Image (cartoon, rainbow, N blue to C red; front, side, top):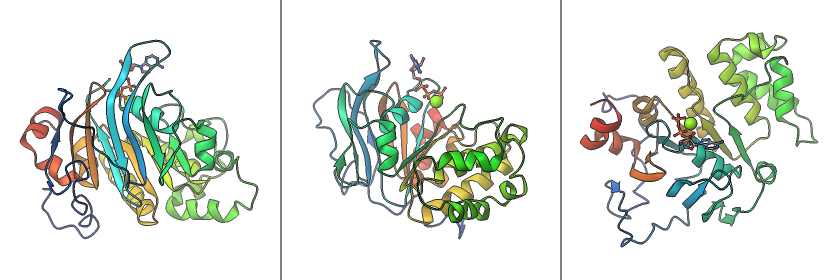
Length: 277
Ligand SMILES: Nc1ncnc2c1ncn2[C@@H]1O[C@H](COP(=O)(O)OP(=O)(O)OP(=O)(O)O)[C@@H](O)[C@H]1O
Ligand SMILES: [Mg+2]
């Protein structure tokens, strides 16, 4: 299945050398013995490295996980419920204070920046829940996404309508009246309104049909082709890894497996434990 020639996807999933084990190319299996130095990922465009953190004074949910995404590439985080995938996204976006570790964007340490400051640096985030304003129209949602901009946003709105034509047709409708897949398009479109260099998506295909999922993934590939870095959490692990340049299997807040999407799809242990065989 993954070896099927597909002109749309065939440059995905196998075009970067392993950044975890340079030259190794294979999988990095988590080693909690503490004897192996944490991998250095200084050159990736977006890096959350050795992240440790939790909520308030509670226990650590992230236990040293490292997530990285190269410019214009798609990085996908998968893993069981409660593994800390959304928490890792919040940490990268600055919604969670790290107890250890760092976040870097284009070589700059942004660990201490607020989410708003990260938006100004080019990051955009579509959270897992409550990611649209249901009572506002589609177009008002897009306008809200541009809150930081002082220039003309018309061109960007038109670009988003080109990417998601259905949103143009429904631009005067309250976003809450749209189907699940269309609402996710609104959420992604709203995030793109700041013209980000990094687009972070937490389960963009949650609750949509397989056809709508495929379509959304195709649009996400299109966004990456424009040079935008994608960091995405996905419940549809198999399909997401098929479009992933890099995949991360997160378990209990740590890196269980890391590799190209193709490597993870081919790994017997990953298949057995996380992809249903
Ligand atoms: N706001 C919060 N306050 C306290 N604990 C939280 C909060 N959000 C999440 N947690 C806890 O952190 C752990 C990881 O949750 P998280 O939402 O990051 O997992 P996830 O991998 O995204 O799961 P899912 O696949 O269900 O979305 C869970 O034990 C969860 O109960
Ligand atoms: Mg989650």
